Amino acid sequence: MRIAIDIDDTIFPTVKKFIKYHNHKYKTSKKFKDCKNLHAHKLFNLDFEIFLERWTAFTNTDYHNLMKPYPNSIEIIKELKKNNELYIITARNKRMVKSTKTLIENHFGKNFFKRIIHLDYKDLKRDEKHEICKRLNIKLIVDDSLETVLACSKEQINCILFNYRNTYNWNRYSKTNKFIKKASSWKDVEKKIIIE
Image 1 (cartoon, rainbow, N blue to C red):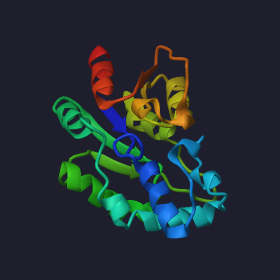
Image 2 (cartoon, rainbow, N blue to C red):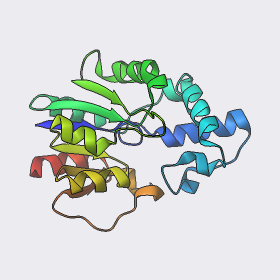
Image 3 (cartoon, rainbow, N blue to C red):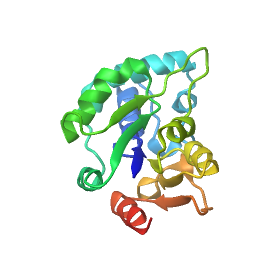
């Protein structure tokens, strides 16, 4: 089976680390619980381009490079690879290819994933994750984005909406359906995949 996995706030606690970095570097005082949606530029009241520059700079710091993955994520993902074809599909843009590759290789080794796919804006348009999943015949996606999960479920792609310890204010969603399952840990993800 082909499985797609998101990086940020699915494998790694990226938003939490970015907030810590931003508070230190720019003397802000935001908290993780203040992040109500995935548009973090709104949390800091920043123009999107300025936010993107800061996010890109963050990916070249120790805040990013020394991030520890969520408990059990590495072991479970390595186990999944034994019988599945794994893809990373991330909303990170192409300016972050090198730092993303380094982060992934530090934890999984080289060429672990079939492909690492970065979404990128072209004239304010980009391929969305559900379109990429459909094109690649992905059967399951693990992601923290409610928007992504809802779009994928409409394409009849199985989804696991990841919300680590139910601490993400941006993806609280009470409904599930035939295509959407929720998980609050990687042990939870593993159980949901076995049930599939």
